[in-house]
Image 1 (cartoon, rainbow, N blue to C red):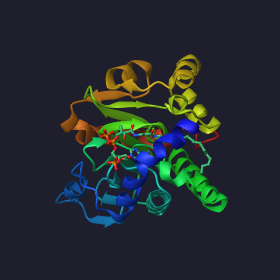
Image 2 (image 1 turned 120 degrees about the vertical axis):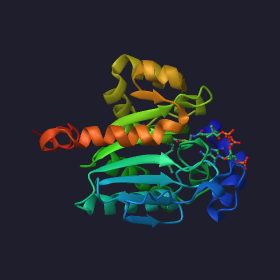
Image 3 (image 1 turned 180 degrees about the vertical axis):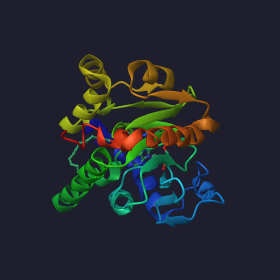
Length: 263
Ligand SMILES: CC/C=C\C/C=C\CCCC/C=C/C(=O)SCCNC(=O)CCNC(=O)[C@H](O)C(C)(C)COP(=O)(O)OP(=O)(O)OC[C@H]1O[C@@H](n2cnc3c(N)ncnc32)[C@H](O)[C@@H]1OP(=O)(O)O
C-alpha cells in the first residue's frame, strides 16, 4: 500500500484531468467516434462508455473511453455496471465484446486517486463498485470476450480475466497481469480466484507472488490470454470468435458456463 500511495502524487493530476475529460496525450479524445456499421441499429454512449449494439447478430461492443488510461474510477465503474446491466436485460443481446478506445491501453486498473486521501464512506462506495463490476462481468449470462488492444495491469487484467475469452494484440510493448505485489499490495482473494480459474494453481502462485506482468507472447504461453492477433485484427477476430461461440447449438456455450450454471 505504501508503494501504491507513493505513486499517487504522480497520478493525482491525471486523475482530475481524466474526470474533466481534457487529457489528450494518448490521443484519447480524438478516437472516441462511434464505429457504427450500416446494419447496426443502435448505439448508446455515456461519458466513459460507448455501447454499439448490432441487433442482427445480438452482439454488443462495449468500448471503454476514459482517458488517459481507462483507470477504473468510481464514475467509470458505475457507468460500466449500468451499461452491462442494460445489456443483460436486453433479451436481444447475447454477446458482449469489451475493448478500449484508447491507443496502447486496455485499462490501467483501479484509479489510484480513488484510494488516496478519501473518506471511509467513499472508499466503501468505491470498493463496492469494483466488486459490482467483477460480479456483473464474471457472472454474466451473455458470452463475454475481451478484445485487449493495449496494456492491462492489475484491475485491468481482472476485467479481462472476468470475460469468457481473451484476444490480445501481439504488440511486444503491451503487458498484462495481476502485478499488485509489485505495487506493495496483496491482490484480493477474488482477484486470485479468478486468476486460478484461468491459468491453474501453480501459474497463479508464481504470477501473484512475483507480481508478474506478462508480455503478450508470455501471456499466451501461461494461458492468461487465449489468442494473439495483429493489433488491427483484434476487434474483427473478437467478432468472428463471438459469432462462432453464439453458433454453438442450443446456446450451450452460455448454458455450460460453470460460473453461472449449476447444472
Ligand atoms: C478503497 C479501496 C479500499 C481497500 C483496498 C485497498 C487496496 C486493494 C487494492 C486492490 C488491488 C488493486 C488493483 C489495482 O488495479 S491498483 C492500480 C494498479 N495499476 C497500476 O499500477 C497502473 C499504473 N500505470 C501504468 O503502469 C501506466 O500508466 C500504463 C497504464 C502502463 C500506461 O503507461 P504510459 O502509456 O506510459 O502512461 P503514463 O504512465 O504516463 O500514464 C498516463 C497518465 O495516466 C495516469 N495513470 C496511470 N495509471 C493510473 C491509475 N491506475 N490510476 C490513475 N491514474 C493513472 C498517470 O499518472 C499519467 O498521468 P500524467 O498526469 O502523469 O500524464
